[in-house]
Image (cartoon, rainbow, N blue to C red; front, top):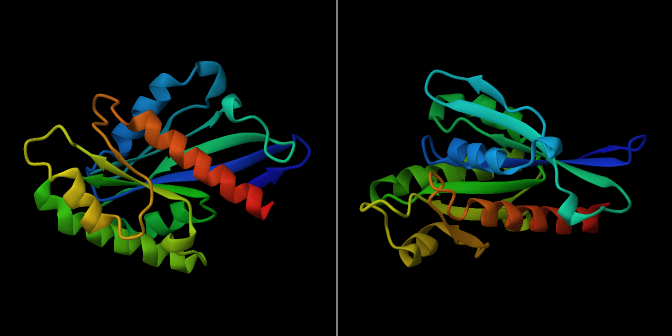
Length: 194
């Protein structure tokens, strides 16, 4: 969180985390397409060898003010591949909320669990832990025939009982609901700390 007292703005950072190719980029591209150009910044893409890291900010007027300040949300994705560990650590610095985008395909369960462990370890480096941090679990790719059941995925991935949203990010299903829940959880935490 960064507070610009002169502008009466509070900048909050939301990071979309998860294994490579789970749908993090697709989520942000869909969100970006749904926000009025007058309320969003430029979509910035940093290309890596196999995945893109996206970033943009937007003003969400629907949530009103936080302690008299206008919220500006900065949304990021992280590269999911193992060899981008340092990039993930850097992007997580000063994070205020997390969306964990799980790939619902049954053969990706281990990748999801590895990525959750990586997230927890990186949050620990920042002095945080998943059990005391605002995060939402999104079960993406629910439209695929190889997707595990929602109940089974929740049992295996949602050990902290955080809000869970089934999604098909390529169609926009569950994307805005995930974002709304994340913003609400993040704002609630900010109210406790500011």
